[in-house]
Length: 486
Image 1 (cartoon, rainbow, N blue to C red):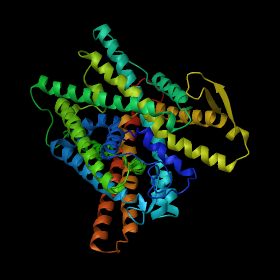
Image 2 (image 1 turned 120 degrees about the vertical axis):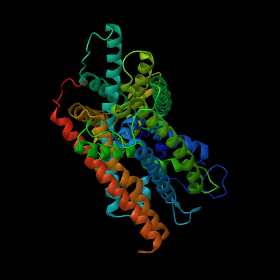
Image 3 (image 1 turned 30 degrees about the horizontal axis):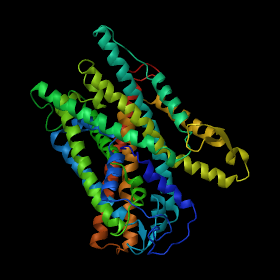
Image 4 (image 1 turned 45 degrees about the vertical axis):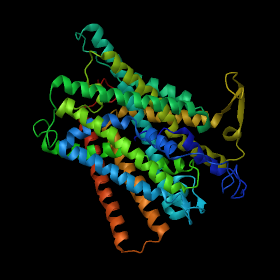
């Protein structure tokens, strides 16, 4: 999902439950909704988006490009970037209801859907968001175990000089990741994990840059660009596999561009004037341009380096020898990044369930009581332990870990997540909210163009989902649950 790791922006999403007093529009300290003046700019918003987008999804782009070839691969990447930019521009116009400069603010994506569409669609939006978060937690667990195994295996190969096959079971590494997440998930909310988000952001650029650099060096070593105009050739794979893999590649690319779920929250950090929508359109253009350039380089250089045999995870394809230490650094950076990204991405779901439980059982001490535990290193001097939070978040992490152990297929899971989240969250809701807000007449030229765009993206998402599910079915034929798979 790309990874969506911006703690400071998402924290804004939950402040809307706090009652605030209206302040004068001319106040130097407060905005028109009574909150402290927002200070975000084009550059801070761009940084938030880039940080959120560039994540583990970039590692699958070389494989995706290999399925599509030198013509369709870059073309599809560019197409997704254009659609993402265009629909993001529609979405940011829905931050305020009514007047674009003084209308009521919508602090979260669901608030925007509630204001513009209302009714049953709000529940559908919430369901898709939270299912997507659950799926991303599984995807991150799988990706982290692959990177931990890559470190162990490369060191094993190096020490044995290739004499040891170094077969490794992924389960212990998924369990290690799960234990770390159980501990970190007890951090109550967003304002207390900002440091984890910053570390995760630095790590994402670290491993992406290493992957790009290694791809370039591999092309130089080969002395030529690998690959073909049409991608993986029939013979290397069957005709049916070629079709399903091409569809799955669409899902992988969609996952790499999925950040709409936090766009409204980022917009809520931006100062005005000028209008927030104007600032965010510039920020989205800058960030999508930078991200697409980075994706093109990583995807195309990875394909140029490996051709038809481009790996599902770019960093696992460079062998186990020199510079094996650099690969270890990159894979360690992925693990650190995913530890933080898992937390930042799951916080909205954690907060939603805990708020819902508190509303349903306000008198339950198990749900509401907080036990203060002295912890001198914390700024507050104590940690507030909530038993419901401890139990529910631990169960959540255990469930995602067990499912990951049962279905450790990185590319398939990434493709399913991209297909499942791209159309509704990146295209459908922004288009429908924009039509409702601007009161665009039904069957007008503009209405038809927007609906055709939405339908075309729906078809692509269905194809991507079908390809990813087919990939899971094929993998399951040769897979034994909880068995060595690397």
